[in-house]
Length: 99
Image (tube, rainbow, N blue to C red; front, side):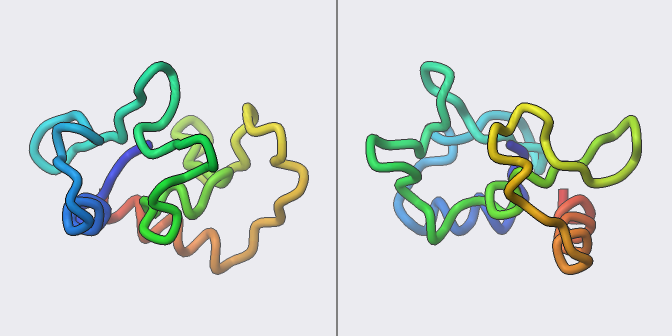
């Protein structure tokens, strides 16, 4: 999951160290997985849910570079439960600009 600067700032303000939850250089950072799972995924779910990254808030809406548009992630088993509105598309466009 890509992280924008706002995501990194919000998570570090909670006391997490960037090197623990992300990898990458400069402004290009990606959420770290540990044991094949998100760094923030605990036994009860997301441990930073109210402060989760923007991409997590939009998921399963993701940007498909080949189609150059937002799509529902084909690997999400719950994708059929979601509808995508214009506000969702605009939020994804905004996130892409930040990344």
